[in-house]
Length: 352
Image (tube, rainbow, N blue to C red; front, side):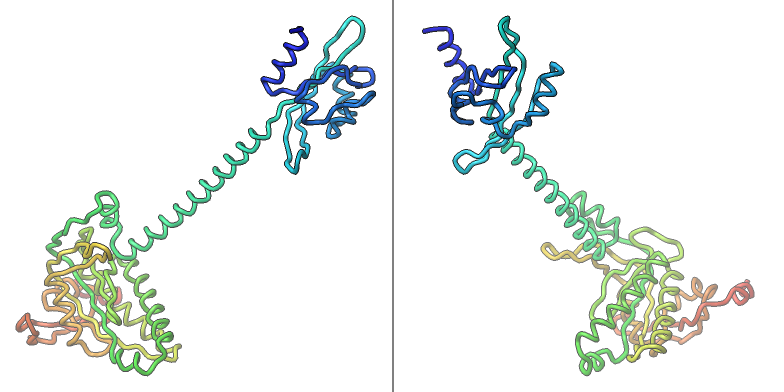
């Protein structure tokens, strides 16, 4: 086998198309079979730009004139498929004349793989962003169901350990004649009104460092002193209660529907924990919650009732008046007080 035949076989084996052209007129001296399969067999007198139409003759001539290696990527359509080739053209000086060696390599598969990788990377980035958004949405949802410290424990360990809080305060609000209002009002309006009111209540609760635990129909329950202990938990829920009523009074002046509420305050021990396995709900149980729930029934519309045990803590900042002992189901006789508006600064100073 001749040296030329061996070289031709090697070139075919590595999948590289090779052609040799004269530098003077770019006519062909040699080409191998892969080159002919991709670009067609050059006819007599055919030039390189005629066979490889995607080449830029001016750019090629400029680079060759400066003695630079010419590199480019070309696309050709072959049997309804677009192929991409990496083309390198370099000089091969011979004693008799200057020649140019044209090397062509099919990089279509490489570019397809790069495109697939780019598409996959884009898809992964998009899915990652979607997962992050979903994670944030779930986190916001869970933070609406439980305090942040409880959420952090649940996220870390997958469970929440029930905690006994020996001294907290509770505010329980219930609307007057809500059943009749809901029966005669369009449900959409009823829910819209409740949503506006409870959203305002949430802002008030957050302002005074309390935690809204849940709403049950038209009832609203919030606590102070848990999960983080606070020494002024009694005054915190009382501030919330007075602001609830103040908000309703102002809202009633400018809205079509009138809302009135009864509010009960309670203080004492409570247990907080996540309840449920498939549907998680953070809830609070115990004497403080039971007391607030019972006392709101005894409150007059737009009034606040608290146990006498809270009087000492509240009298420094609120108008507090005695109601006296009242028989309460399950609790027996309980001394109650009525909590009025907040004291002004001069009034509070005169208490000392």
